[in-house]
Image 1 (cartoon, helix red, strand yellow):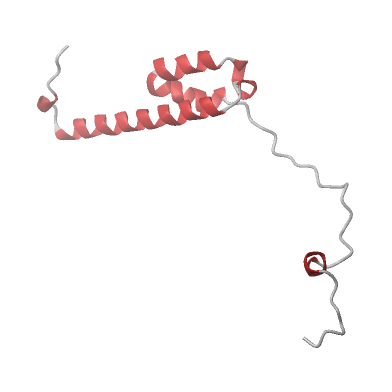
Image 2 (tube, rainbow, N blue to C red; image 1 turned 90 degrees about the vertical axis):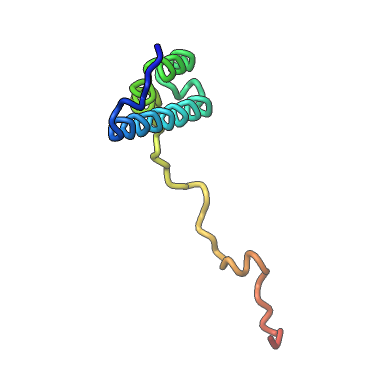
Length: 104
């Protein structure tokens, strides 16, 4: 199929270029995220299925992966309870206690 884009109006060509850039950007972001994310943090645990979805379902595949395919992490952090409050100042801990006989 040989398509001549010169017969299309300029606005249509501009929209097509924007859509291609958006699709490529979303695909790259989704593929990098899929590569870096452990399989345990991917929905269904099968990265090959998500790779096929991202590459074969065009723009919707990347959006679907970014919205549904990633397992959300828990961000709640328990406050530290094992460390008592320091009894000395930070300067004393770093440089030692101050010597009051020093004239400086």
